[in-house]
Picture (tube, rainbow over the protein chains, first blue to last red):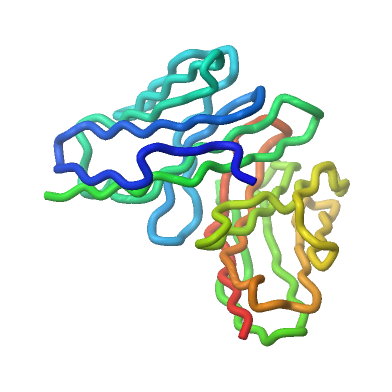
Length: 113
Length: 112
């Protein structure tokens, strides 16, 4: 079953615009991670945000986490054609001592010139 | 530092056969997790190993199994392959639990 649901499922923007993707989840988490995947290849890690953090930045990426609403957002600023990919959020649950990433359904981002 | 490597990258099998996939984690990483990605079910967790012990398992039938060796390399095995096992199988490694998981390029399995 999917822990996370992402919104929108698909997003098409022009180069230079900002892209915002949202992720909602159901249970308490230890951390939430965002990944990028190009055309069915391996996943590239973007950012990890822990449950006690509210915001993190990495280059053109900004991630927010609202544990009260069980939601997170990924903002890509000044998008480029190379940002075209699928983006996934993944939650690492708070129970137990072993990791188990549960992925969302993903957002397909298309950046056009 | 070399990334996570997976072999083979592509594999074609027929129904009823069995397959073994291999994953070499990033040097120093002791946790290895496996995921299955299909268009219909998305990315699903298979199992996680740490120090040769399986500590977590997803909702997959017993035909899916794995193991981890003392050098942290891991293998997963799927027996009695079914058409629905066609998928991209991804391996990820991390230093330990609740850390960043780094993914390999995946093994694309096609079952005919």
